[in-house]
Image 1 (cartoon, rainbow, N blue to C red):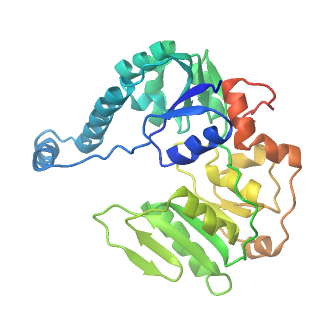
Image 2: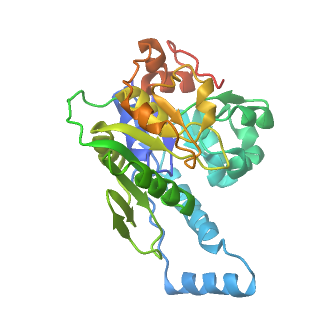
Image 3: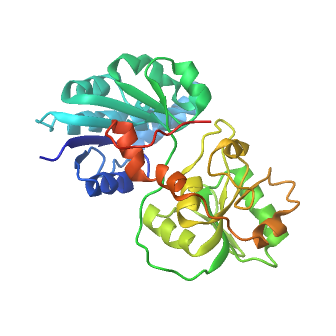
Length: 331
C-alpha cells in the first residue's frame, strides 16, 4: 500500500515537488494543487488605502492574502478523512496555528522545511511543539531554533536525458528587484558584446515591462518546466542571493545536475563539497575581474556520489528518514 503524504507548499514549486513524490511511489495529497487565487475587490482596495493613509500600514495586502489563504487551506484540510503517514509543510510559519494543529491531528509525522532566512521565517518558533522535525537551509538557524532543528539544502529534480543544443552562454531567471536588475545590466554591459545573455526578471504590475538585448523585465514569470528547458540550453547560470540569507538556492543544484557553470554572489558555496572554482565564479557583481577567463575554462565534472546526494530521491529519503540515504549537512 502506498504511503500517504500531505504536501502544503505555497511556493511556485508545488507542482514539481508533487510530481517528484508521486514518482517516488507516494500517494500525494497536495493541498494547494489547485492554486489559491487572491482576489482584490473594491472593498479590499479601499481597506488598503485606509491602512496606508491613516494607519501608516503598507502590509495590508500581504496580511490579507495570508488570512484568506489560511481560511481556504482550513477548508481543504477538513475534506481529508483518512490518516496521513507524512505531512511536509514548506514555510510552516505562513500558516495559522489552527491549520498546523489540524494537520498534526491527521498525520503521523509532521515536518516543516524553512527554506528562507531566519528573519523571514522566525514565526516557526511559536509552532515548534507541533512538529517532529524542522529543517533549515542555514547553519546559524539550527542554533537559533534549537531542539528538533535539522540541516537541509534545496535539491535538483531528475529530468529527461534528451540532449539539447546550446543556445545561450548565460541565463538568469529571478525576481526583478532594483539591485538584481542593476547586476544583470552591469553584467550585460561587460559581456554582452562577446557572449549571448538571456535574462527574465519578474517585476510588479505597477512597473513598466522592458526589453533590452536578451534581458526582459516581465510581469509574468516562467513555469519551472519552462525554466528547465531554457537552462538546459545555456552554458552558465546566474544566482543572485538576497541579503537576508546565505542558504543556497535551487540554482546551485540545477547547475550541479546539468553540469552548468554558475555566477553567484553567495560566498558560502565555497564550503560545500561540490564547489570548484572552475565551475562557480563568486562576485559582488561590481568587480567582475576574471569573469571572461572563467567562462572560457572547461567545466570540471563533480564526483557522482556527491551529485546524487543533492538529488530529490536522496533529499526525500533523508527528510522522511527512510533508508537508504546520505545525510545532507550544512558546512
